[in-house]
Image 1 (spheres, rainbow, N blue to C red):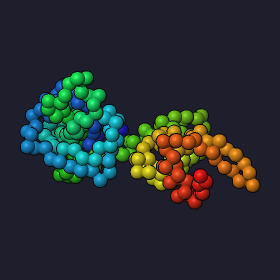
Image 2 (tube, helix red, strand yellow; image 1 turned 90 degrees about the vertical axis):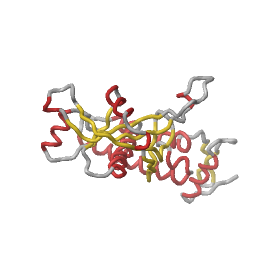
Image 3 (cartoon, one colour; image 1 turned 135 degrees about the vertical axis):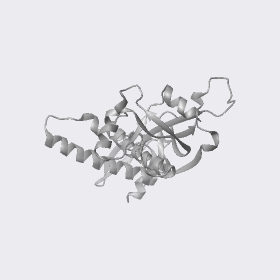
Image 4 (tube, helix red, strand yellow; image 1 turned 90 degrees about the horizontal axis):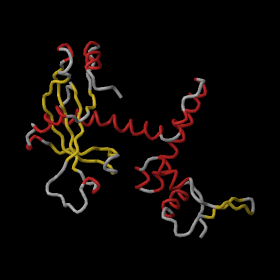
Amino acid sequence: MLQFSGQVVEVCRKAGARFSLAVAVKKKIREAIAGIAEDAWTPIKYASAVWDAEEERWISDAEIAEVPFTAFTSKKKAFHTTARLIVRRVKRLNPKSVPEGQAELFGVWRHHVIFTDSSFVLAQAEPMHREHAVVEQVFADLEDSALAHLPSGKFTANAAWLTLAATAYNLTRAAGHLASAFHAKARTGTIRRHLINIPARIATGARRLTLHLPEHWRWEADFTDLWTATGQRMLT
């Protein structure tokens, strides 16, 4: 991901490219957000949900607004850049964000901010930037599994491992979709723990392998759907 900096913006503008950069919510950004009128927020619903790690849930709808903003004012004047500050806010639902014994008195929002000179209107510019998050989630998922073992000292070994990692990722995602609606959106690590790395006992007989699965298993129905969808037979 490109870093939010005056140097990056300068390079983009010299190359004639548009930029769309994620921004940390610090003091000046919070002040800009506070200046956005309440009636300026527009509801938006995403075609593909985005995982919110802090809230531990999938986000499919939010509210967005924009305000002009001059960035990098602490740098020399050549780096001062005025563009659009686009803000997405999502209401906090995670009970961890509310102190124990205290009910909610008013809505608390989490803000996600981008700085962009996009020529698209607000309702197009913000979702286009959010599409990056979907790709980044895939990267994070891979880095939490096979890509954690890179790099090797040999380019060819890395290339082969990357191909295998991508294949395993796609197969695991396909398995999740076959298993259940929950696993269709779960990370591959969750799918491995629930449906692949399972405490089954392997038995052989009549030239056939049989998996003896645990009783009263939480993911039994999901595993059964996956197993039968791939053409296997369940014996009870």
